[in-house]
Length: 158
Image (cartoon, rainbow, N blue to C red; front, side, top):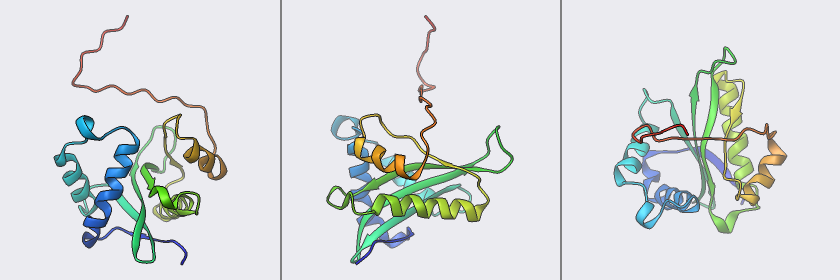
């Protein structure tokens, strides 16, 4: 049965949660570095808050959730239209290489187009070779390098 991509619904929580945990574990957020439960609960609630610009899709095969995509819209200084940030993308490991990630990306792009966004962008870790192989087929790598800083920390320029 081919993968079906659909919007997340409230009844998906129990099946979404292991995918969310798998996504976070892939990026090293497990055990001592696991996200606090408050972040997971707040993230879940935002998907259903009409005032929050955060959205979620899931990929389903034979009645089982096998992937997720979380995205949001925001203004930018380089274009008039809003842009779409694909914040999280994850495919259950046993389903990788079967078109799940591609289907999720294409669904996010379709929704972005309907919303009037002119661009969808995302980031991944340089070690994500499988993901980068797919991303190179469906998008352009523009060469940007991402820096981040927690604003609660002290930063001293050296």
